[in-house]
Every structure is written in C-alpha cells, then in structure tokens.
Length: 258
Image 1 (cartoon, rainbow, N blue to C red):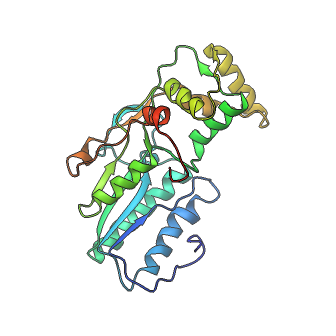
Image 2 (cartoon, rainbow, N blue to C red):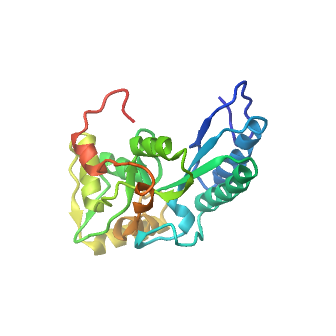
C-alpha cells in the first residue's frame, strides 16, 4: 500500500501496462491525490517505464453542468477542484509518456456505478435508503453513467491503442429510471414524487441550513441533462458496455461483483 498523495511508490519489477485509477473528488484532497499523486506514481516507475499507461480521468474536465452528446472535440475548461486536478494530471501524463515513448490512453468517465461509489450516486443511494430522496414530477433529465466493470474492460482493451476517449453506457438513462433501479437494489425502497416547486423550496432551505441533506446544486444535478458521446472509442476497440439501469435490475450480485 502507498499513499500517492504523499509518497513515491517503490516497485521491484517492471510493468508492461499500468492502469492509474486512483482519484479523490473531495475539494481538500483533489489536488494532492489526483495531480501530485500522478506525479509520484510516475516517479515510482521512472527507471523502468511501462509500454502502456491507462489513466481513468473524468468528464468534469470539460467544466459543463448541462448539455447533450458532448464529445472529445469540446475544449476542456474544468471548474471544480476535481476537474482541474484531473486535467492537470492528463497534461502531465501526456508530456511524461511522450518523452518516454509510452502509449497513453485517457478514459474520461461520467458517473461510475459500483461498489464504493461516491459523489452524486452515493448521495442518491443514501437519500433513497433514508427516505429523503424524491423524484421531481415531469423531470426528463438524463445523465451519462457507466458501470465499473465496463471501465475495467475499456482500460484493458484500449491500452495498446492510445488516445483520449469519453466512456459511458451509451444509454444515458433518465434520472427517474436510475433512481428506481437503485431503489430496487437496496430492498425495493419506494421513492415518492414531488412537484418541482416543493423540491426547489427544499433545495433553498438546504442552502441556508447545512443540516438539510439537499441543496440547489443537488437539485440542478437531478433536474438537468448532461450526456457525453462515447462513439469514438468504439471505432478503435470492440467494446460493448452494459446498460447500467438494466444491470442493476437484473444482475445477481455476489461478493465478487463490483
């Protein structure tokens, strides 16, 4: 084990492929883990660079809060600490790999579903489980998402090719359907539907009182569409990601599931 934010790892062997998936979305840790941690990892493999390196980045590098079918031609303009630190890591890796003839693949992921998930998905699960998550009546917002098993398979397949790619399940489910699938996974919890005005009022209260587990930012995440085009990677590799909502509804999870 090694804390990449503070230490340079020591390896006693050379690796053909390195998949760098370490990351942290917390504002106070993002720079140390995502940017400095990437530099420390590279220092650890400096003497014997791998042939191929895959970096799991994020669509937050684009700095967009809403939009549809956003592809890799859009110029990154990250706004959050997480997005900025991930983009700096991307830039560092491009230079480092170019100077050492290492094939670099960057996978920009949206919401990642799987064991240990954090951020928006964890908030949704917590809210559904505790009874304070609600559907917004008439909400037709969609979000790009991908399951962790498909991030892993994409990393394995893309490693020899190199390039920068968005990844998603290509379904971009309705947030309503995603919520229902999560509720199914945690014991068939019921999610009630409220009018937008009431949910907005709850968000404003959350802005004023931190003890309320809801805010205008969270409302925006639930009520706006943000989807990313991931066609480019399929022109390079034979990759068929799972429909995340269907996977949640039908997969029989066991201790080996992600």
